[in-house]
Length: 68
Ligand SMILES: [Zn+2]
Image (cartoon, rainbow, N blue to C red; front, top):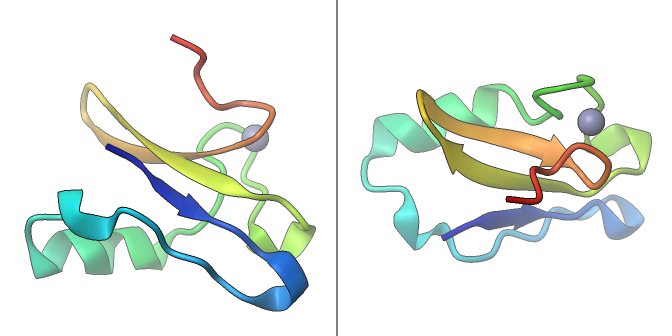
């Protein structure tokens, strides 16, 4: 249950979007495509992975993605 956003050559690759159940959720996610911890975005040559946590779904870079 995750989404991967990769900025390879400036292109976004979306995977496993099925867990987004409503259009409003998609729009909310699209507004903030950056690491929840450090704020780095796709434009900073990072790959971001979304993880559902208590309180919502957050994006994390490869450094800050929760291991557990
Ligand atoms: Zn980060």
